Amino acid sequence: MPGTDPTHWLRRFDADEWLLAADTELRHCEETLARRAVRPAVTHARRAAGMAWNAVLVLTADSAAALAGVWERARARGMDQPFGQAASLRQAYLSDALNQMADEGVALVPVFIDGRWREIDTEEDLGRAHALVDGWD
Image (tube, rainbow, N blue to C red):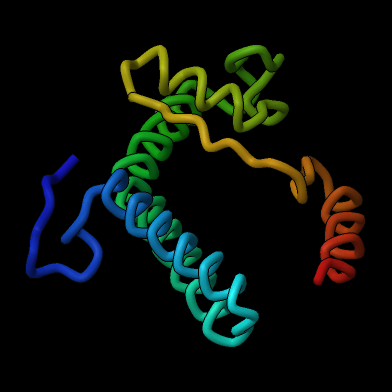
């Protein structure tokens, strides 16, 4: 994982620093809402969300490369070969690949989601999730 780079818009902070900045924006949002200033509060909330995504983006390139490596090595063994807990790579879940990454020493960090989350394994799941999310404010 590369270090921080003060000249780069994304890598100027590491993931923890982006999350701290997002927390600061959320505090500003709460303070602004307490004054019933909704528009500025929304601006702070949007900034916080963007900063949280920046934390993900900082980690994504390295994590994506590790995941791609796991996939390519498994694919080279054959799509019908066992992979993780699955009978074949064709039937594997993302969790099988994540477990393989952990077995290879890749540091994985959980992201806790409280509510408004849906498991999507099939096209039907995706359709149900779209219908549900469209109703969220």
